[in-house]
Length: 98
Image (cartoon, rainbow, N blue to C red):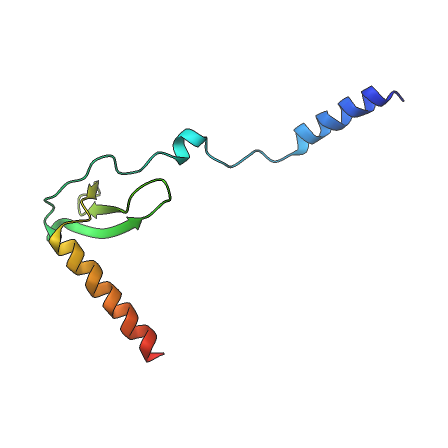
């Protein structure tokens, strides 16, 4: 069998049986979730908070509202800073107790 033909067959077999790549394109990986933030979100409208920190983006806070809408909240808001401070203190106390 010819070496070139064998090489072509091997390459085709790898292409056919190789699993597809699961990685996102670079343009999507580098894109930040929050492009703009809001400063006024009443706390009683918020169902849950999600925190995202990636190497390419600043600290981001996403609030899921009771209406299932998601908004990016400015992490510098006073009540959010207090919330984070309280959560960190609670975590420290829990670790000290164990």
